[in-house]
Length: 90
Image (cartoon, rainbow, N blue to C red; front, top):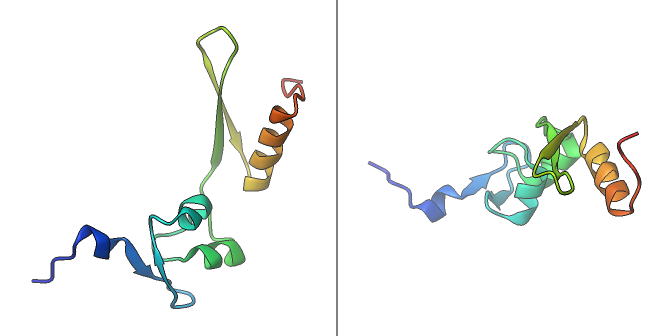
């Protein structure tokens, strides 16, 4: 019986290019993708299909607003505009 340690389970080989990568690496966490795809291939092949969300606390209400974005670029644009004080409620 082959029992892997937690450390061994965090190391994968990419099904596209054969590179070895860590599942807990910052690059892998930021791009997503399937468990057997390295970060570079996820970006290059555009295989990430997860919906991107942003969540904001509405001022002085105790309520939250959750927004769904079609692409990572849309999410980043939204957050950039929000940080620059653009009124996104219009």
